[in-house]
Length: 361
Image (cartoon, rainbow, N blue to C red; front, side, top):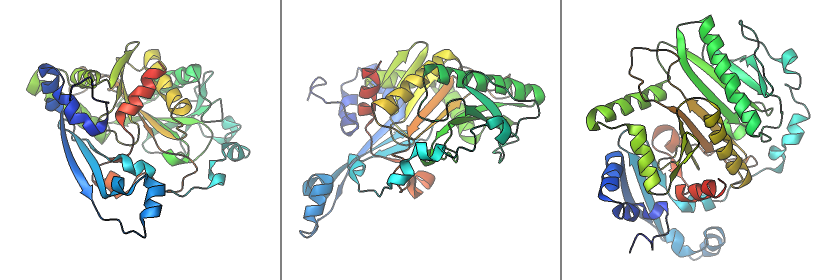
């Protein structure tokens, strides 16, 4: 089989790596390990009609191809089985009624219904800030969007959201100079952990050390640079680009992740938390919403400290991560014991995600 004859898929990732140039293949193996296995079973004849209706064929169930991709640098990993996307799930039409929920919007007048930070309320055309009633950390606030419908965002509103977040980081740091570790998160709708439908994002600023998983990524990247003499994020980008899973957008680099935390995870590596980062985030979310049918998502920005600290944060970019959290009408959770305590199990193929994102560029 030649590289040209391969139809790119996570299921033939090992074969694709074999067709990379020697340097690209070595770079891939420096970061990733791929294992394949076959899940086998016998389906009773009484169950065959349901299996065929649900999964397409009995053969597809009796012999399942499972691919596991492990990031040797960060310790992240994902298990892929495309059959899991066809599992039957329970839904509820009423749970998907965004307009109905907004009819009783508690944040219709946010200045009257949300508290403000001690340093005051910030605002722009996209959003205004509000102190979070139940805080994750001492410095933890909301960006309440001007547009209540959480899926009605556009390029300008995403730019405005990130710009306001940046202003809040500066204001919170001025109020507490020891708080220097910023984190931005956007939980869109209840599937993603959003408790209120009105569109909003959140901002935090930590003291003493960064949040555990962000610090873990920093330490892993620093150890990689010390061992191999090359930048982890540059090599990560090169690996994804060699496989057709990465490209540039302005000054940002966009990657359909080989080890997604959940479905369709897309990484954006930007030099800073600025308009280029916002534009790449908007472009990704617009494809998720308009081309891939995503209704609920998590988006975060992993950011270096606001000023020099004891740890080595050199070359650490603004890292944006976006994942699909599934249809809002579905009752079952997309996160279980595997995701919490072992390793994510993924139904979406990164190569399909990359194709959709590239097509809309």
